[in-house]
Image 1 (cartoon, rainbow, N blue to C red):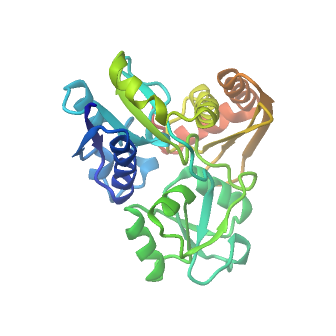
Image 2 (spheres, one colour; image 1 turned 120 degrees about the vertical axis):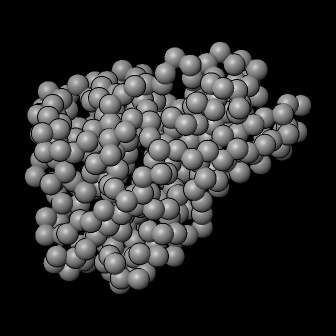
Length: 311
């Protein structure tokens, strides 16, 4: 049996994810150690992510630990991983996916439609903001940073009438008490890779890859590969107004893609089916660009929204 060292961010959710993988590895008989690594994204807590624009902001320092052989594998929320990894790394496993959808959380209100005019809604995601503003242009959208507990505490204290979070994180932490609505993907398209964990290793580390093979889920691999191919085609990082949601149905992949202006005035959606995840993602991405997605993204640049670039 092997001794494996896991690198992880120190947030409550990141630690849950790292301990989850640790437990699965220990059940296989391995010895597991955990190293907590503070990333750039963890250090910048008072600015909306879309305004920061630092590529790999939740992964860079962890990848450095991999290169320096301080850890053997890294556990990431897959949506935090850039779509093009540096040549030093590979994704050894993509785990069985938790619910990838977004959820509406509120103390007083049952769903987005029930919010009063000019209600205050918290999110730091341009993707969520754009889709909210398209549905309800009267809403006031405010930046929301911090870990899950911090965000929920701000909601409970009345700072916001509602906040939008990922279902996966709340489900994993067992903090679903303020979830009022699981938002359908056709109403709010999730982020590429949302709900999946990506296990990153040094490129060519065949021994560790073999040990992690049991964690790789075929459906999660296919759907997230498709979503990430779309995101890559559009040149986006994890905090851009781009959504991608794929499902495997009867052996075929169905992909819903989205590009939207943050103010919600322009929302492009495209749905297509196929069997090759990368080709399907690229085709939907190309169609969105051709239909005006390129203009929308150029406008986002021009208005000072930072789009994280691929490394």
